[in-house]
Length: 126
Image 1 (spheres, rainbow, N blue to C red):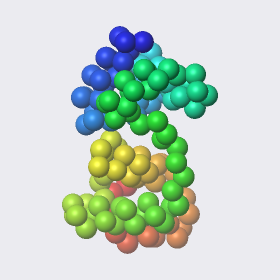
Image 2: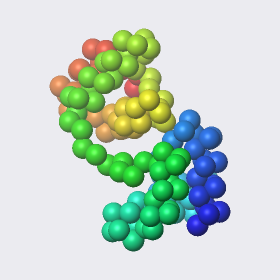
Image 3: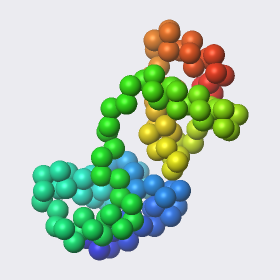
């Protein structure tokens, strides 16, 4: 456990402080599966207090699938554009990890014409 925890710390340093490792992480499949297992064990209350505390010390993100309405994410993107002059949010964006992921998802999956128009209205970077 401790060895993989150290790998997570290295991942975090290399990825702008993010502990959100994809479950199917190509560069280190073991790390991706391990991180997923920590979250699952936490939810099922099978993870020891010591391990929870260790993960908390590095700012481990326990819940990554929180539903946020589309329009709220859009408004966060508008704010980002106002601040930075672009909608090209990095996929790993520590200030708002959900925004980076959401923007990437829009590039891949946005099919609704009204949503596409809203994104185009703010010069969305496809």
